[in-house]
Length: 60
Image 1 (cartoon, rainbow, N blue to C red):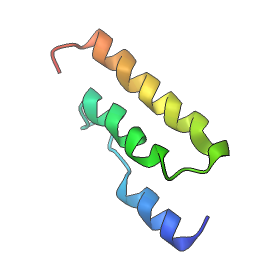
Image 2: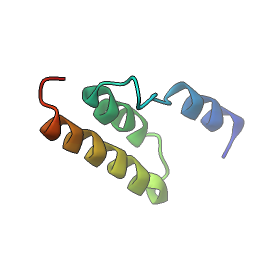
Image 3: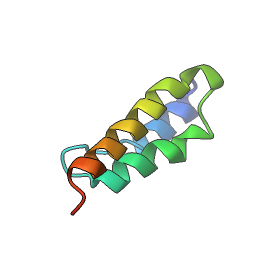
């Protein structure tokens, strides 16, 4: 990982404790286009977790 990639990753960290489920879904989507092909699985896992939280807590 280059320094630029690390810097971008640090900027896209979402605090899951304070983030809304929508943020949990959108943050991984924003990094998806920059991620190398082999690194998409964790991004999709984050999207899946955020969507599941939206189903459980729809008022957020």
